[in-house]
Image (cartoon, rainbow, N blue to C red; front, side, top):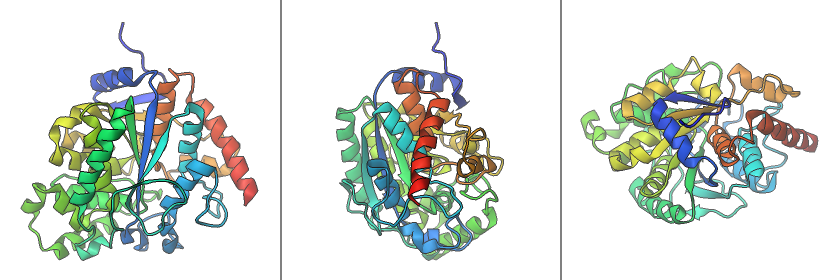
Length: 368
């Protein structure tokens, strides 16, 4: 009898491979690792939901990790909820982690503001504006160290869920995918309902030109692509995945940014792709302004799964607004939800997760 996929998880790409991947992780305890970093690209006006206060993006990854550990932030006053009451997707991940009891770790890819939590240090630097064509310093060093971390996490894990928190990351994803020769324009997602595709492309083209490298050279060198127009999350996440996928399944938890990570993995160690899947949210896979299926299909035969989270019936407007296309994904919201459902063999559902999110949201809002 074939494995039955629960209705709260949708297979979006490579159905048979996705089914087998889910069957392999079903009932097993996941280990969650979130790679965090900063890039000056996030401060370019109009690129992300940071909007009115781009400087605050320096604090976002650290605040997200503090939320996972403490249920509140320490590096900023208040809580990670926007003035409009819209919470970070970290609230989804925090809820999934709490419900499932999965162990979680933080990996510093390159930060300006460090969190008040324990983390793996890979000695990476924060990213510069990709328009300089020199965005990330020495990504290969970070990648090599991340491979070692991934190999060792694999020794104590049934499978690894790799997430990210880096504002501005969909623009750098477009940069690296374009540099590596993929058709990515109009296909990366955005935290904004109106995806600024033209602005992203303009920024990327400026960076590629400033790098002084020919496009053909980039296609054979993922680290050069990151160095020119990437961000500090990418080499770390790719290295973790390659190191872990040598021996255990890896779920890349995120949206179109994880397609860029997947492209880097393919360029560095193609053999590990058969042990990797992408887990994201319904808001990404249903998004008419991006196309994760097209991106992943260009890279290789890798399953894409989505968590059918639905906030339309929430009691809180700050959660309902997710259904308008704002935010969509981040901090591994979709992948951590899928992992929680799989760990519980379906006892944890999308509804269970929403109930926990609402409890946490009520607590966070009451602190404001």
